[in-house]
Length: 75
Image (cartoon, one colour):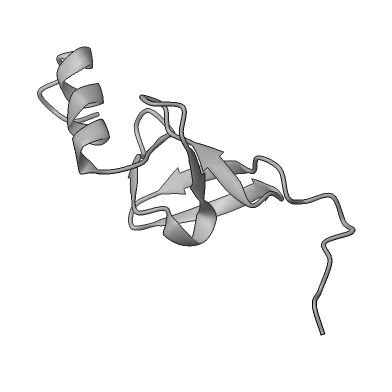
């Protein structure tokens, strides 16, 4: 049987990024990359910044943001 999401939680989630984990604040199925704007499914989310509270689609996007901010500490 196919389940249909009637709860309306298929949109963008609000997330609190923690060290090594994240906490969903408002339900949704994805977040957006802070650099590219690409939607990232929550179950595929691997890269984020705790200090900036941002998600990244991949390591390259994370590095780009780090270089843009010029923050040597990574925070």
